[in-house]
Image (cartoon, rainbow, N blue to C red; front, side, top):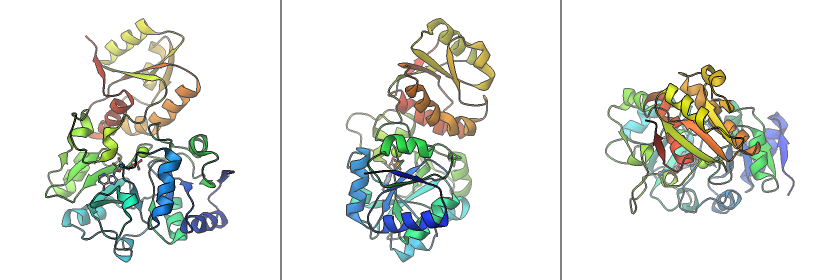
Length: 340
Ligand code: AMP
Ligand code: MG
């Protein structure tokens, strides 16, 4: 199959809308990361997503809509809890996925769970594509399973060339990490994955929000994942990621002592000149949004350039840094080395 990269013109959006409605896969831009989309109401089309990504069948997908009314129109959920209504009013459209009890959604989408994840993206091109398709779109990130998520159309082309007919190029993703996932299907809202909407922002709207154990820690053997995606080593480049916990000074001296031709170091703009080996800056030191937006493209670039070890400084576990921490510990296989 020839994979075509298309600009988001009216003609191309209507072309991919028709392709989606009739069961084909399309790579689509969103404000978080690029998605690999299929008609969410067509189980066979959804199965093709799992095949193209090599995604484990027990990892459910997020259903994307372009209007809140589509939840009822397509009977996606059995009920909308009060907490979900408040979160929708505060954060939609935007980088927040809300889990509710499932309605009429194929089992392929929910991986057999009795809940469904729904998101209303803010990217105008995503909204236009969903509207052109005329159906909700199931879409996980458009990477090969386990690899860093794609934040440009070129990343999607790299992973999906020959496997899907179309990719719409909507430019680089603004948020750059996947959506925040919160479940409202239980008594208390639970944060399952940190993203562009922070834990603090969620709590400011619905009061106490629990943080699922797997957000910040490796899961125990035999533990059931509240969000199946959280259990996998994830977001990982081919190079080994060594995550180092300590002060900025400790990190810089460690890297300077351990550089070789095969190592690359993630760092901040302010530190580039203080580190001797090959550096890749994620952005300004205190700007975690900027660092999140750059993380996946930097990891992909380091792989392309052939390094076999990546040093990274361990971010804080709170606030806007939580999404970054959550991605980096998965990229590092949950190992953090303490710098003495
Ligand atoms: P991705 O779009 O590739 O980021 O993957 C979707 C994420 O949403 C995965 O981590 C899933 O585990 C999570 N997810 C989707 N549906 C559900 C659900 N019904 N319950 C819990 N987590 C879900
Ligand atoms: Mg993913």
